[in-house]
Image (cartoon, rainbow, N blue to C red; front, top):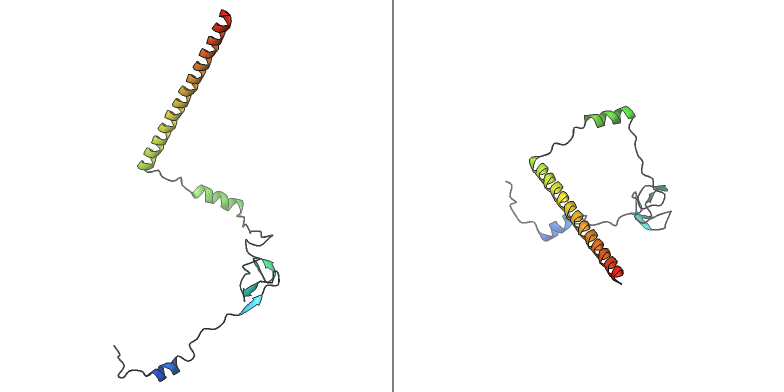
Length: 132
């Protein structure tokens, strides 16, 4: 590995680095909104570039949708195989189904209890009215 024989002096180092400096980026004014914008970039305020709407921020932005030919779309759908389910996924699905069934059964029992209490109240009212 190469090793310098002598240390570089401060003056030589300074001369070498004399052109190593930051430059101010070029900016322009957006013709649509008047915002200060970097050259050759989309305006961050209004979303336009060279007088055309190109960003989702801009009003009137329309995303281009490429339509596939019908045959290609059908072929693509036919090629996709259904995803294989793992044993863990099957077990989780079974547990979820069981929980749903249990919840439905509890709801039915609660509804029946409410109906029975309503019927009992009606019978009590009917008895009270018949006694009077």
